[in-house]
Image (tube, rainbow, N blue to C red; front, side, top):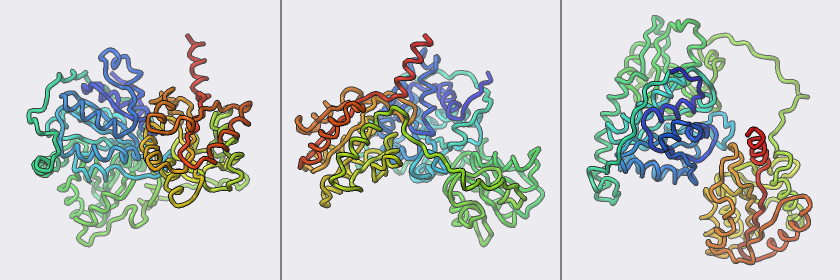
Length: 532
């Protein structure tokens, strides 16, 4: 059957057709649509495939590993910075190995369309020493997801699929294949497999090392790694993942005169690369993200040969590639558009009209006037837009949950009061432990939890602790009289300013919970009711 799918959807469909019993994820662009596709799927509902959102990427990774332990196939999905959160179980899963097939799909965001960095997840896969698949198109994304579980089970190892924003969010026709039945429950043959006490870890690590030669063999023979010969040996080209598309767009009819290695599976196919290196005068490496392949070639295959790529600035060191950038690297003439007139300014993103965060920042700005600027910490969410005019309310955005711990650290340094602004979903993702640190030391910090009952920035997914934020704060140990609940509305402005002023003056931990549902999720609910 032919389907017209986003790259993210192709992976989801491939995983379902590949026999998954569960998908575990925390929403984050550009990976969100993978789990959402499964959540909407009639097939997934009929088969009762688990698809509920996890609290964060670490819990998603651990849950996926638990399903694998029980012999079932599972996929874990996240964006690139989410892999930082999941790093502990991710790295250790390579040591434990798997039972049921396990694929970790990570969506990188070169050019930082909606991220705080553009790190390359292939480094994590290489660091963990596991196989990595990198599709060049939606059909490969589907095939890799569907077939990847069998590969994972063949070597008892988790595998990574790495995609980027452009592939995740573009559509193409995908030919689907027959549905593979789900695994039955089966426990690991070795009862010690998942026990990483040092004596057992050393045994498991040797198994991982021994498997490296198998992974290299699989890459040399993989259908996703291909050598296309060419008559013009003045240049050899290595194109990884989606960058292969950017290359062939510059050669109508696929008539590239130069030898090409198309890379879709790692570790690198060494024999192919050695052939290219020996036959061609110089090498151009096209890869989306960091120069991981370029560094490898310069370290192991160079032998004095000229290697062009991001490191020598043949390609930009940052940002996404595209056909025009690749054309310049090939020495082609490119057409440049007219410069954008100075009078046309970019329109920055802004909080929605009617957003509860607006009322929170208006009140906070007024309450903070007597203390001065530059003492409000925040992190990742819609409320990060409070850094922009007209609010200019917050002074940091580093990672999920960092608002509370940075405010505590600033208070430890003597910046009192210090304020943290965090959303409800981010609070449950990574903020609770920071609050516990603050409670343990009774730090003089004021924490504003702007609770809009949604993971609003990524599309309004359900928040993990809707209606339970107050109970969580009390359970962590915040004094009941310093857990204040407000409704952020214009009519309540004076009350909000008064409460904030009281808690800012308190020499200890205080939490202000501003509860009002996201305006977008309210609109969606009304629309759905109307359609029904």
